[in-house]
Each structure stands twice: as C-alpha cells, then as structure tokens.
Length: 246
Image (cartoon, rainbow, N blue to C red):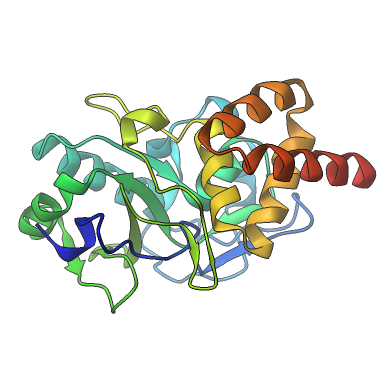
C-alpha cells in the first residue's frame, strides 16, 4: 500500500483542482474544444453543447468531447478493479448548477485500498499513474486526451498546511458511489469537501451552490454539522453571504 494511504501521516492537500476557471457569464464560450480530437484547452467553443445539456440530469460520461472519453476509460478502469468512486471538483460544481464553473481536470474520490490497484492497472486502460510530490496526492494522466485525473484519497486531509480540515475525506460510498457507475458526488459530500478545503475558490463555489439550491439549505446545514461541529456555523455564514449577494 502506498504511503498515501496511511492515516498516520495524513496528506494535506485541497480536493479542488488548481487549474479550474470560472466564467462569470454563464453564456460566455466555455473552455473546451468542440472538436473531439482537439486537445487544446482554450477559451472558445462548445458553448452550445454544454448550454443544451441539463446539468442536473447529466452523468459524468455525458460530458462532451475529450472529457467524456476520459470518463469512459476511467469508468472501465474502476470497474475492472472493482473500485467505487465519485466525480468531485469543478465538474460536480457545474452539475449542481454553477454554469460558469469549468475545469480542465477531472477529480475523483477513491478508497485507500484502490490506489495500488489503480497504479497497477492504469496503463492497460490508457492512463499513466503519476506519483505525487511529497505532501501531494497522486494523479492519473489520460494519454489520449492529455487530461489529468486528480485522485482524492480516502483518509486524505483537505486544506493547506496552514489551514487543515478537521476531518479527512471519507469513503466514496459515503458520497453516493455505487457499483458499475461513476456518478457525481452527492451535494452534501461536495459541500463537505469544499468547506474542508476552504480556499477562496471553494468558498465562491459554495456560495453559488447555496444560491442555486435555497430549498436545500437546512438539509445541507444538518449534514455538514454531523460531519464536524465547526462546519455548521461556517456554512451559515456562507448562507448569509449568498443572501446578501442575491
């Protein structure tokens, strides 16, 4: 088992990708190429394709172009090693209604005991396993599409070295994972990880999610309070901020 999977030395890192971008205008061109063989991440195209999608009803494999192809191979890999996982990060934020949130990478939550199997079998399914620098989490690199897949390991500690989350990432099963599928993380799970990460972009994501789902505020507040007592007050502060901005 990799050192990453040991709970005695928690790895501190944010579960939110570093290469994300926010489009303040949801109708602006999104940052994906409409050509499925174009591997360039640049500010044009596919606006119409994503605009026509129902984000709330879509699944990760429905993502257009090279993102959908990456998810398809990732799903095959996970099924082959019998591993549960969920898609988190920027694409999950988009799924829950923040139309301006687009990211270049894919983030998935994985169980500790799946990491070695992912490392062992990645190449067969078109991925390279990228060992992490010290203090970071591992990645998969999809060779065809050149997309990074950030692995958010069960037991990892979100946040930064100076601002660590009070709780670790839980099992994918706690976030809505199921056999033979690769779903988006539950909304409660996404809010939980974002609160733990605590960076400016995570806070901005949470405020937008709150704005989009005012009917679920009480449910989310109860969920995060169960995860850690400090999360409840933090979440209510963001609710107040979201209401002031609306």
